[in-house]
Length: 560
Image (cartoon, rainbow, N blue to C red; front, side, top):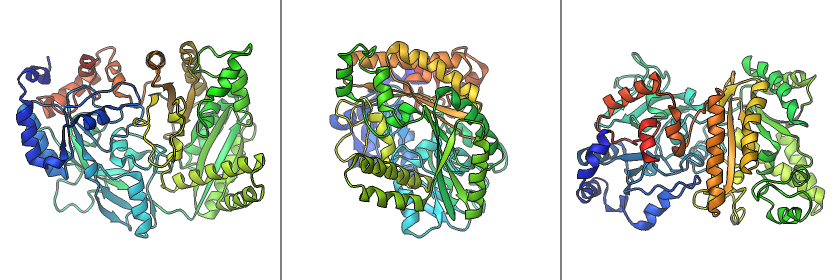
C-alpha cells in the first residue's frame, strides 16, 4: 500500500483548503463545480474530477502549497496551461487531487540576446514568447509546435515534446531548472545552486550528477522555471514539401533523406504525414458524403472509417505520403541544402517542391486574380498553408494545425477557428499512440502495417505522422480521432488505442510519451528500471503527494 493510500482515510479537506486559501488568496483557490468540471474535460473521454484548483503566483507559493498538501496528506497534480491534448489535457491520473495550475506564473524572467536564451516560467505560452521576442526587436526565434498558441513551453518540455526548427528536440536546448520538491524545498539544477554561477543557463550539466532528466516525464518535482535556448534569426528560410505517390514508396524516401539528417544538411525536424493526416488539416469528417456512399455498394465498415472510393476521391491530388521540412541558414547554405535534397531524392519517387517568401507572394497574387474559381480557391488554400508553415518555422505558433483534432466532432470546426481553439472544451475525441522507431523506411512501414490492422479492425481511419526527431530515430504520432458524443464509438476508440499500443509495444516500438490512461501499461514485466524509478520517488517524495500515478505504472494501475 502506498503512503497516499494510507493517508486517504484521515484527510481533513476543509482544513487543508482553508490553509491553501490563506497561502494563495481566495480568488486563486477554486472549488466551485463549474471550475472543477472545466478541469475534468478531456479529449481522451476520461474525465477526472479534481478536489480543487490552486493558482499560485510564484515558486514560493508553490512550495507553500506543497508543504500544506504534505501536512494534510493531499495529492497535488501540477500543470502548466493544461493543454496536453490527447494525453490527458488538464486532468490528473486519479480523481480527488489538487490541481496546481501554474498558468499565473507567466513571467519571461530574462532574455539574453547575445547568448540567445530566455528564462521562463511554466505559464509562458508559445504565443507569448514569440510575440515578446518580436515586439522587443530581439533577432531570435523560439522553437514552435503545432499544438496551438496557448500551449506552454515548459509543459511540453516536461513531456519531452518536439517541434519543427533546428531546436525542435526541445529538451536538448534547456539549461538550468528551478524545481520545487515534495519537501517544499526549492532546488536549482546544473550550476544554478551556486549563487555566483555565470553559466547556469548555458551549460546544462553543471558539476556532479545530472539531475534535470529526473523531472521530465515524472512526478518527482515541480519545475517552476528554466532556461530555454533560442535560435538566432536565419537570413534565409525555405520550406520544402515532398509528395510520395504510393504507400510503399515512402521507405526509399526516408532512407534517402536519413544521411542528410546525419551529416547536418537537414537541421530541422522533418515531418512525414500520410494522406489522411494531410486531409484532416483542411477539412473535417465528410458526414454527408458518407451518408450518400452508404447507399451504394461501397459502404464503410463503420461510420468512423471512410469507404475506399470516398477516401480516394477526397485525397485526389495528395500523395500517399507528404514529407515537410525547412531549410535554414544563409542564402548560400540554403541553396546547397536544396541541391542536397534534390540529389538525395534521385532514384526515389519523391519530388521536392520548395516554398519561398517570393513564391508565396506570387501565389497570393495569382489566387486573387483567379477570383472565386475552383483554381483560385485551391491556390489560396495552398498559399495559406504555406504561410502557416513559414510562421511555425520561425517560431510563430498557428492554431490551424489543431484542425485534425476536430475530425470526428459532430459540429465540425467551431466558429472563428483557429482563434481560441480548445479541443477539450469543444468536445473533440482524440487519443494518440506515439512510438519511437529507428530512422529506417522499413521500420516506418512495419509500424504502419501493425497499426493499420488494428485501426481497420476497430473501424477507424489511421492518421499517421512520423517525425525525424533526431538524426537516428522517428517519433510516430498515430491518431485515433473519434466522436466523443457517441458512447459506443468512444469505447471502441479506447479499445483501438489499447490494441495498437500493445501490438507496437510487443514488437519493440515503445512510446516516447503516453497519456494518463496508458501509464499503467508501461511496466508489464516489473523490470529493474521502474523499480529504480520507484526507489527515487520514495526518496524524494516519501509521502507520495506529487502527481501519484504520473509515469508511475504501479500507482496508475490502482486508479484504473
